[in-house]
Amino acid sequence: MRIGGFAGVVVVAALIASPAQAQNNNLYFSPDLTADMTAPSAFDGLYAGVLIGAISSRHNNFHVGGEDIRPDIGGIVGWNQPVAPGVIIGGELQATIATDFSGSSYLRAMAVARLGFAAGDNGLIYLLGGVGRVGEGWAGEFGMGAEVMVTDNMALRLEAAGIGQLGDVPNGNNSDAISAMRISSAAVWQLDGGPAKTTFNSGPVTSFTGPYAGVQIGGFTDPQFNFFKNYGYGWHLSRFELGGFAGYNWALNDYFRAGVEAQLGFNFDTSGDKGGDALVLARLGVVPFEGIFAYTAAGVGVAEGNGAYAAGGGVEYALWGQTSLRAEGLVIGRLDGFEGPSTWRYSTPTTKVTLGAVWHFD
Image (cartoon, rainbow, N blue to C red):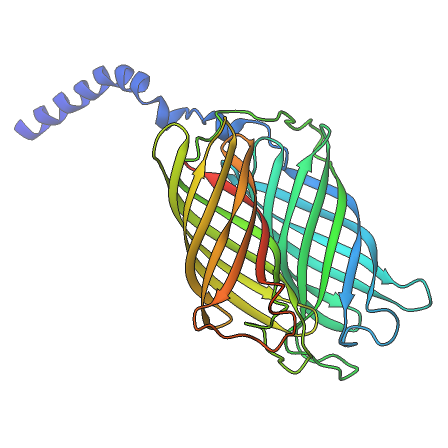
């Protein structure tokens, strides 16, 4: 009896309390998604477009004969899926013809995965990686790109990628490094039926304080050959640079900022040369007015396996509120004072020049 009476009391109490619980537990039964998750996305669903650019392949592994550098023309089709506020994953197929218009041409057919980060309502900065066929051989590629909506349903894109062999090629001209590179532009149309958001400068503009992270692309040039070596492909003074960075800025007052940043980069060319650099930089800069940050930077690290120092600076422009566009230039030298074999060493320094996108979390 005692057990039965206790159970009856519990059931009655639950029935009495249930209306109040139903009112207080809407989160569980009728969740309200945040505006960030329900807002229209400029990069969501099916898309297709046309692609035109240039491709460079110098080892005659993907093609034999004809020009090393030639136009690359074709089309793309793909799908974007938002997975978190400001984060998009996607996949696409690219098919292009690389021709020198004199009887030499080859097909590039690539399945590409993308990881993108929103730059405001209508911009996307993304990393890419893919596998497919280039000419007669299997190949893989990796790189970085940017896409900006210019109408409700059309975006313009610019991307760059390095390409390397996957296995041997039939003609036997094998290369075990990055042996081709493409720089491509595209016009892309969203086919999901609804207009995308196209507003600029939404939300608060960053104050350039607190933590930040970003990706960058550019060039590493070493005409003195202080760092670059002849890896068997000849002396080449410049390479393509792809990398990322993270750091923290402190506000000294309303105008001045001090910070520290770590950079990690990978560089390569289409002749088989490749290398990397890792730098830790101290930064001091000024915010003369909202949305602009100009700074100097200096630090130490490693480049091509050698101890290095770096000095330079850059400018950030908060084009997309909390996201900024950055241009930076660094002069890099050997800590051991080594001077390379180039006769240019007294007039042309080693440099790392990059363009990047920065996400601020202030």
